[in-house]
Image (tube, rainbow, N blue to C red; front, side):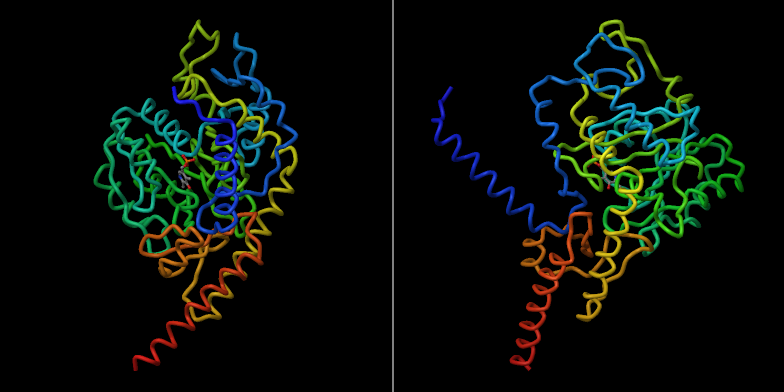
Length: 382
Ligand SMILES: *Cc1c(COP(=O)(O)O)cnc(C)c1O
């Protein structure tokens, strides 16, 4: 093994830290909050915390944070209006694993089902459907990114003889569009498809969905059977994490006991990150429901401000109702690179809780300057 000298090692670390700090300051295009402070939990990094097994079952491995994990699940169960007597879940590695779990339960319940998801669905869903080998049909999206309910109804009609798994999205990746679970339920009822399952991918907007007014139906009371939430997006965490919530009665159907860990093998991975549960627990204890709500309202205000300022410059910026994502036409490569804007045929600014009006002003200033230069050039060329 080539030995790296101590100085070069610490130099490398310092360089890395500088780069990460700089990149983290100019960051408007991805949905991750950076305004967290978990320094009180520093001591816990010295221990091999592993949340192996089901968080609601005893296990022989005791270096774990199951108790905190259960409180995180309880918090989200309340927030997502789960039946207090019939919920279950665990802290995952992120939204992708949460989606895999939801689809896994759905397939175990209805092995002969068809999955329906819209064009705007997150890429993890397509991969998960492939992994689980479930037949699927893509439903058109409306212009705003929301599922086209007429297309869903027509497509379901042709497949009425099959159980239906509907994957709804609450906060699509590019436009933060939200599928209405009540409308989906209504269509299933109208077509008398009794064997159905709705998984709601709320990785992006699930942690603040309860505070959006007017309310957009998406949670357990609205008809979802399982819901994915992300931990490192709106709430914020140094390590990616997520939450999957479902009904306890559904989990019971797939639970298998494993004597080696003295617990139930109800999770996708065996070893599980116990620090993530601790971070999430710390965050919800610090914020509470009220704190989470004001966090959303503050983000919404910054988003509305950003939209207004862009419109003032003559840029066609818009957003879905209640969204903290502002959609705008493709920007120049220089702006896109500097502000790390994810771009497809459009681009977006996501006003996560750490994004300030000051940052928006700096961004607007860049857009303005560029506009002035291009309009000057246009005059010279004319
Ligand atoms: C982020 C996101 C995911 C995936 O989450 P990861 O944590 O990256 O695995 C899935 N769906 C939606 C809508 C998302 O925003």
